[in-house]
Length: 368
Ligand code: SF4
Ligand code: SF4
Ligand code: SF4
Image (cartoon, rainbow, N blue to C red):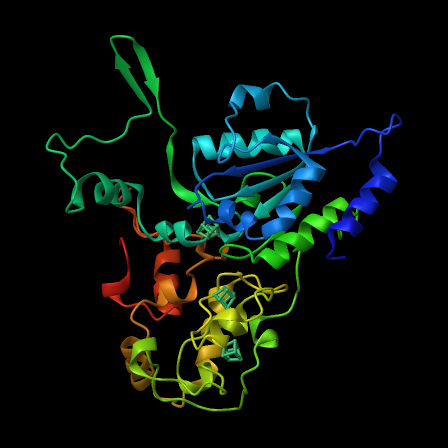
C-alpha cells in the first residue's frame, strides 16, 4: 500500500479513459484560520508528492497556485474529488469558503487540529471579541494606533465601499459549519498519516463517512514508556525535572496528554522526552479531551484534602485551560468560556462551571 507503483496500478485499472488518456482527479486544499503548517505538512510526504501530482489536477489551492473564488463558484457542484480543508472558522469569509468548498467537493476532509477541533486558535474562545481586537489593534507593544481604529465590515471611501470579513465572537470548527466526510488529525498531521489517507482515496479504500483517517487508539498505546499505578504529590513543569527516559511522564508528575489524545503520531513527543500536549485531539469515543485529562490527572494525585489538591494544581498547572484544552476547546462540550463577555455584560453559568471543573481560579479566568 505504500508504493507509488501500487497506487498507479490501481489508477490504471480503474481510471484510464477509453482513449488511454489518464483521467486525473481534482484536488483542492484551502486554509481558513490556519498557521499554514498544514499546507507545508502535505509536502512532508516528500517524493510521494509526485504521485499526488500524477493522480490529481489542482482545482484550487491558493497557497501554491493563483486561483480566484469566482473560479470555484463557477465549478459544478461535486466537481472537486477531494478537498483538504485546514484551519478553523474564525470569520465570515472562512465560513463562506467552507460552504462553497463543501458544495463543490465529493470528499471534504477536515485536515489538522484547527479544522477538526479549533486547535490553538480555538483558545481565543476564552476571550471576548473586544478583548481579542483590543489586544491586536491596541495593546501590543509594537502597535501604534493613536486613533483607536478597528477593522470595520464596511468602509466607505471616495472610490466606493470596501468590505472585510466579519470577525466572529466564537471560533467554530469545520464540522460546526458544514458536513465533514473525514477527519485527519494532528498539528499538523504526520506525513505517514497524510500518505495513508491519500492512498485510501486513490485506491477507493475509504472507511465509513465520519471516520478519522488513522488509528483509533491513544498516544499511550503507541508510547514505549512503562506505566504503573503511581501516585504523585506535585506536578513538574518540563524545565523543573530531567525525566527518566523509560518511565511514563505522567507517573513522574509531568502533565502528559497522551492518555486522552488520539494516536497516529507514533508518540513522537514522549519518545523525545517531552510530554504529549494533545495535538491529535480526543481519541475515538471521547467527547471532551479536557475532561478526560482532568479525570486522569485527578486519579493520580495522592491526596484527598481539597486544599492540598488545589495547591498541587495551582503550583504545577498554572494554565489549566491551556493545558487541558490546548487544541480542542472549540469542539469540547464547553466550546467557549461564556464569560462574561464584556460586550454583553453577562456571565453565563458555563463560565463558572468551566472555571471550577478546570480548577481555574480568578487569575486564570481569562477574559472574564
Ligand atoms: S493544525 Fe497546526 S499546523 Fe495545521 S493550521 Fe492548525 S496550527 Fe497550523
Ligand atoms: S501518559 Fe505520556 S508518557 Fe505516559 S504512557 Fe501515555 S504518552 Fe507515554
Ligand atoms: S505526542 Fe501528542 S503533541 Fe506530540 S505529535 Fe503526538 S499527539 Fe501531538
